[in-house]
Every structure is written in structure tokens, then in C-alpha cells.
Amino acid sequence: MAQPTDLDLYERIRQKDKEALEVLYDRYEKLLYSFAYRMMKDSQAAEEVMQDVFMKLWRGKGAGQYVSGRGKFSSWLLTITRNASIDLIRKKKVQEVEWDQRDSVHEDLPGVEQEIEDKEERNQLRRAVHTLPDEQQRMICLFYFQGMSQREIAEKCDIPLGTVKGRVRLALKKLREHLEKEGGIVYER
Image (cartoon, rainbow, N blue to C red; front, side, top):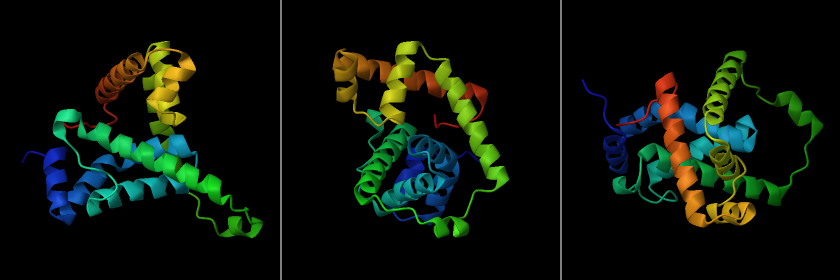
């Protein structure tokens, strides 16, 4: 039996099909978690972002609607994850809660297996990014890992906005191809 496409699952989720949400979650949890972790550098925050993304999908609020003609579903999910990460970063900066030493005693730390898996995914992503030309690497780092907007990147690098958009788009295409070839991340066709 053929695997349902991301679009099929998305439409079923909009009809409140829990099974479709579970399938989509299984398909993208590692990608979204590792992406959020790279931005947040905090496993609990990355988990919170990932859960927020899937809750937005389920509720149909806060994520907008996916339009297949505008790009791949996976890219849309990564954009939602990026925005949720930035929102959480901003929220944490505003709160600036003091760390209480006794809280660390009760903190749940990820297991060794999870840490190894996370490290493997980070290494795979790092290797994929290093296959890109320098200017594309810089765009990806500024856009996804430092949370800058494309307009901010254009101003910082003193290049046209269209050039930034083109480099990001091309870099994402090359990353997707590299990761699919490595067999680490599955994308819909």
C-alpha cells in the first residue's frame, strides 16, 4: 500500500483525523526537533517548539494554511518551526527567569540513546551544509540558525533581497537533495 503524501495527511488533519497527525508526526518529528534544537540550543525548548508546531497544525490556527503551489510541505513546516523558535526565543528574553540551582536536580535529561541520535542528525545536517558554496552556507546560517529575516540578511550582507531569496531557495534545494541521497531524511514527492 502506498504511503499517503504529506498533502493527503494535511487534508485529513484539517478534518481532525488523529491517525493522520500521528503519521505526519512520525514522519517529521526528528527533522523539526533537530531544526528547532539548532536554533534554540536547548532540548526542552526544541521539544516545546516541535509540540507547538504540531498543535498549530491540529488546531488549524497560528500556522496559516499550506498551499501546495507555493512550495514543498516540508519547507512550510520548517518555516513554521523557525517562526515558533523565534517566538519562543523572544518570549524567553522578555521573561528572563532566574535559574534556581535546586531545579537542576529534578531536570529530566535526555537519555544516552537520544543524545547519540541527536548528535548523528546534527552531524548529518552539518555535513550537508558544508557541501554548499560559501555564500549559500552563510545564507542558511543567518536565516535558519540565527533567525534573521531575508531583508535583514540583504542589509547585513549588502546584497539585493532577490539574491538572498535565490541563494536560500537554491541552498534548501541542494540540502534536500543531499539529505535524500544520504538516506537520512525522507521528503514527499
